[in-house]
Amino acid sequence: MLTDDEKALFKDNLTFEETMEYAKENARDIIAIGFDKKKTFIYSDLKYLSNHFLMNAWEFSKLVTFNQVRGAFGFNESTNIGRIFFPSVQCVAAFATSYPEIWTDDPQPTRTQSIANIPCLIPMGIDQDPYFRLLRDNAHKMRFPSPKPALIHSKFLTALQGPGGKMSSSNPNSAIFMSDTPKQIKTKINKYAFSGGQVSVDDHRRLGGNPDVDVSYIYLTYFEEDDAKLEEVYKSYKSGSLLTGELKKMAIEALQEYVRLFQERRGLVTDEVLEEYMQPRKLVWEGNQKPVKESF
Image 1 (tube, rainbow, N blue to C red):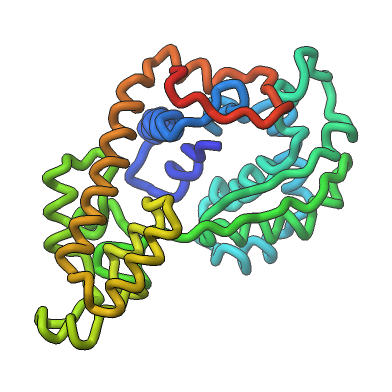
Image 2: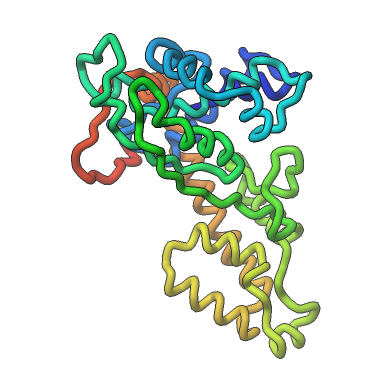
């Protein structure tokens, strides 16, 4: 779900045409991560929202009062009505009945309970939680009730300045961008990444560092897949045998490699590939096949 409608509704300086184009670029990013085309449907709200999806949104909107959304989202008398309706759109994205095309080659013209019974798992940022709390409270009230969705709360990647913040496009020095060059990544980590090390090498050797607040180590926990190696880095840094500069070098190399591979894959996402992922169609649900990242 690419919420290009939400972006235009909540950012007065953006047009719907602009946010639709941004959504296409976001879709290219998602594809470049390596999702299996046979099991992935990516859609723009502005292009896809119709039929069963729209019917679900309207029905769900009848179940929720303005007082409920005002409390959940901080709406007031000056909030535009598009923003007030949008939670219905976001919530019913979790209903299987919103996507009749992905379950069968012969979609039914009306919603059915058999499709509604399919459960939903939602990985999401913690800032999206109010939407799905609202959904869990009301899913059983639909004409075709659906199970309460299960939620996985993801973490925000820590800002370069340290724990507690998140990367922001409005502050380029707070973030590593997927479009950054190897040189930019190196400069940002060396210059801006918060360190848990001591003020001098002697003090660091004697007192050790604090990997729990060190941004370079925190990044390694995301990008280093070898848990044994990660544990060794943690112990070495905490004991003082691994210096801050050495830890930053490890983080730089890990990020440079990840971003390089991502940029290579994104370059393979043509307009034709994008259209294939965004075309409503029956998906493959059986088996446990690993995504084939090369099959763009």
